[in-house]
Length: 128
Image (cartoon, rainbow, N blue to C red; front, side, top):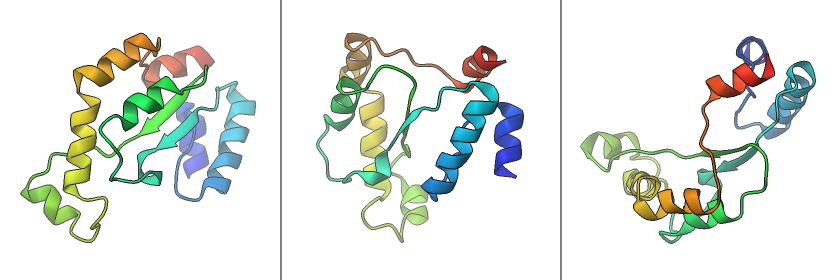
């Protein structure tokens, strides 16, 4: 099903089993000329990282298409209830990421490093 939806919408598949999804991404790239993105996942990093983590990520992006997965949320009662079984990647961590993503410093890092934010729809149009 994942392959079908990815092929239909011309999107790279994602998921926890990276070897399966890497194979799907290669297949999709061959079929659609889709540039397989470099994926950066926030959950692979320590939630105790400093405030400048994402600025550092932006500074070290390689040319091409990159994708950054973040789990943004407000540190409120609802998110604390949802993340009760995630003592490390909890509501406070998600709030820190949210605050970082919308900070003037992060926005300036995007400008300073010539990063162009793009959604999937424009990428879909490029590969048709």
